[in-house]
Length: 248
Image (cartoon, rainbow, N blue to C red; front, side, top):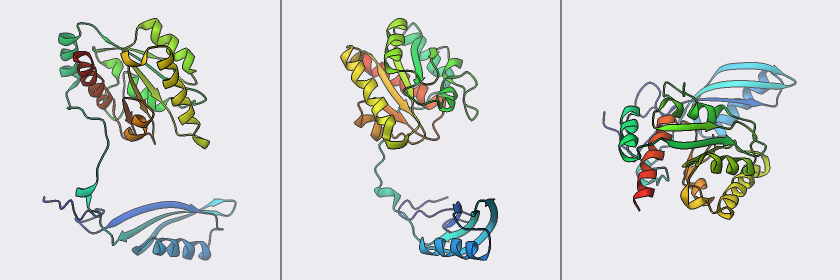
């Protein structure tokens, strides 16, 4: 199939048909007015052939919609510049063998969610043995020794653990929070690593549903992994980046 990157549109039943599925909630009581408002809203966004597939009364004068429609616009993907972690995709077995050969020891990884963040689903999916989406977590690799500190760990506690186990890598998970509290947490950790003289010896990675690689670099981190990241992405980046770091 030949894809024209200069003219990308959503795919539904056939290439270039522009078909999309939307879901949203409007603060309007379930009924004809809510239905018409949802349709007008989609028209205002530029959608055509609008079909209200599902309309549900979710109580307290709120109505939930699932809508099928078609977009008329297209995107020139050939002009988009992506800032993302760079690595060559290798299998778990290949990474284990590479680490055994080049490091002759396990790579030590310390992971945590820091500050007030109590969400560990993302962190666990990357670190725990069972992994995520059929992709084994770092604990499954022979290449890594993993310390998962869990939720609401202070930067001071995290740095203490890094010293205790002589870590090579810090993996921080942060859910974007109100008033950008996550930025303060991440900045506090980075400042502490520099103050303790540890930053240059470590690979420091942050992940989360709204974390971007670009944001991570701005905050002084080595990489940022967002939604859709699987454990092997992080594993490949860690091994290949540490090899570069230690060969300098």
